[in-house]
Length: 291
Image (cartoon, rainbow, N blue to C red; front, side, top):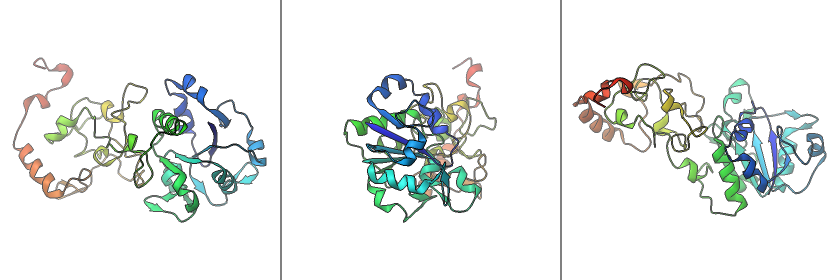
């Protein structure tokens, strides 16, 4: 399968993340990089600008900006040329998908198909063959796995934003090691500690963020919540939001409920949980002699 990687306004985080895929060397044997900004490629960027054939998958990284020029050619012209040619288009990372961080830095900036939650009319002719892989950056297993599924022509169910359900049907809360603390409404007021949930005070977005961060661990080792940092919701169109480390509340109750949970149900369960005090949840895990 022949791949073309184009970068718009980007930090190259997604390109670097792919290099950390544990099976990268073996995996890439099934692909040809027509062009990649960091890897040995069949063509140079200058040749890509002049025009090449054979693109099967177009991978777009970074925020689009009206009038942006890539070397000598408007980026939009490059995107349209190769999007028309490709069988599939992958928007890799939250910037290319929703606009992301770079969209906060100026007007006329957005993702390929979205500006935040708003779906754009531009490039609608490419929507049906587009797949969204948001993340800041996207996990390398998600990118490599999606490309492998496309290469094998395997079924790839998508959600309404065209994110592959294999990776984005879950929430980051699913698999979080702090779920017991969440159930009993026990927050942790010290970053980096193993104990406590960070939903109630520290703005953790894990309960309404689609992603596999606690099912596919970063570098096979860890995730933000396991390391004691709140999920920032980086796979969602609302990223980055203001007040990352604060939970908005109304009369002491979180303003946003966990995904799909009615407010009445949440309040009922929270009231019951608060009536109990489970002593082991209030002791440091590494110091608990009764653990």
